[in-house]
Image: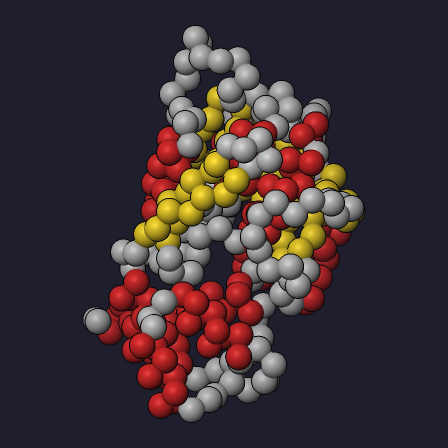
Length: 302
């Protein structure tokens, strides 16, 4: 591994730690045990287990740990799999996903718990999406949007992300599940017009956002570090500016990993004069995710 590649993976792992462990520091543990475990089973489940064991101990993380995990990530870089999820209609959703939590420089190639939670809520509350134009921010692998397209009858559904590899996988997952990315006036009127858009929150302009004309905006598991939170609030402010006559409904789902992170989000919303309220939890659990994790949805008023 080249020095610059190793350094890049270390930086990426630090970003991942903020997302997966909510910025809680890692502690040290016997290195012989770590090395043996990584050699025996170099996969994402091992990464999860190693990082979870560090949550409760508040010591400074070691660069050696990041270096060791970075080597594992490099070995996993090209690994893909297919995962299927069954909708209440009996229709399966099949997604191509990475088997690595971090791959190709992003965490957006896997399905996170908040995406599953938001999909469940949407299926129970289809009126928020039926015959509407829906813009999803940070679509990742696409599970939430595909579930909405299949179950909630939106008029237009716009998947968006900024990372080229994520966008490539997204397009493939849309086609894999029988949806088209080509407008077709002869198609079933119940099938939504589907688009995949590249959208960088840092540089997205009011003009670019106004072209979407969304009635509903959603995002799942995008509150994993302060920089991303600030970018998200910024893009929401620009959406508000371009939709003054018809502000969209906005729903943001997130898993509580660090109270300070969610507190930063609500604080920034307040400073941006964006009102928010907690959406009541839905009743039915349809998809596999950690039941003990605290996942919520906020409804925002732009």
